[in-house]
Image 1 (tube, rainbow, N blue to C red):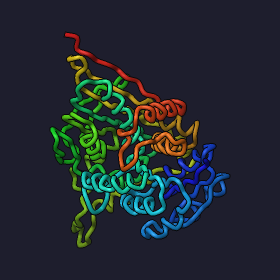
Image 2: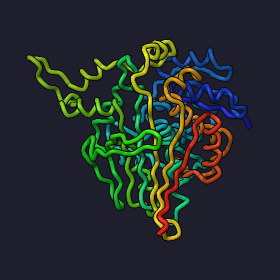
Image 3: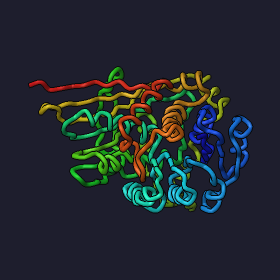
Image 4: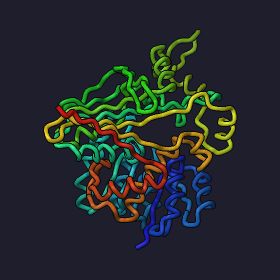
Length: 403
């Protein structure tokens, strides 16, 4: 049976998902919904199966009206809208997918995740699946972490390290929203240790991580969903953490130490100024259209390197084992040359789409609300094979202590 899918938000990720859905034989219609009707109409003109609608996501009834008849609602909006879109999914009997649980304005990361999971029984009773946190990180990394953990008899720790060394000669510190980036980096990271969630200061615990083929790079604790969901869904796990690094992270750390990421107004020669507002106002936005990306690349790359490592430790047959899983994906130059988009849009958008592909091809059997690490073995295998076909592959290095 062919399906109708509604994509809420036609930004970089939602737009890419819509484009990929247009290629799926099981998809009959794609409803592209956005507050900016012109943005939605761009995909209506571009895609044979797309229909544009204007929706104010602050009004749940508008989401419900626009999504009637859809089998799946893909939430590409900021996480503050998650609950409203989930309620619409329940009202219209749709499966649900989003990219992230936080950050949100009214509650911390742990609370944001648990609040979504609290709707688990409602989705189960309705016979529906709500898959949360489905980008690259979180998302792809959760699938990889589960595959690695399942190879062990006893699980000890999961550490995620994301190093982003993309730096053009034109000053572009972030390839996503500067407001989101600075906000994330100034937030207190969450670590999972021995059954408890612990908050630590921003840019906590710097350490040098030796990445395969890259060498040592400085990494710091960073707020992310993975330690939260890992603590809830990985049996026997003792510790989980997320670390981030790269020139943009170093820049943000310097700003933070100078007080420039503060949200309280300061007096500057008689004028009240919020430091973070000023920094965001002066930071160049991430290029989004092909022409702007091309212009930035034409000025050359100062640095183009990166690494995503999921390190899982535990025991197998009584012996200590470390499984290092590296994600391979195109960098900025290759992503633009092959696809006309940035590396950030490619890895996040393609990873997110592949979860949508699971839905439209009936590969998800679990009901309720859950993150990707809950997907069964067959779904994860299908996902990773499809990812490999897009140029997103995984290398695993196994280290076993013999004696």
